[in-house]
Image (cartoon, rainbow, N blue to C red; front, side):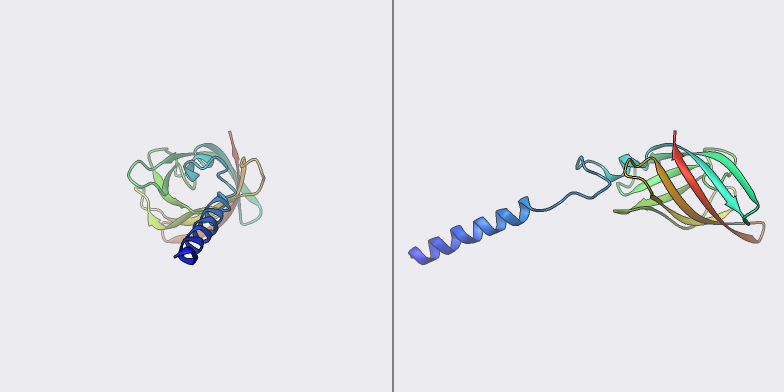
Length: 143
């Protein structure tokens, strides 16, 4: 009986140590919603075929219908904030799986933070419009 009680106390101590030792994700030190770091207005500076570039704003908001998704308004410089793509926030990045936006562009890509303050992201993306698929890289800076 005494051995069972000691074993139970030992097991409880080890279990509590394991839970206390868990770390929060690196991009979310507050323990809150991991999408918070991505929400806001981002200035994208996009490179295309190494000689051309364009700059545009993308607005990232939380998807109210899915706690792991964000909405990227004006993604890939579609021209309007209401033309958007859906991204999934992982522990290290936003992933935009291949999808057709309302302007009939097919987009995909991913972006991840490159600085410890979570104010700069590097993106790779592709856009298929009018039958042509173009690949881009972009640097996004939080405004």
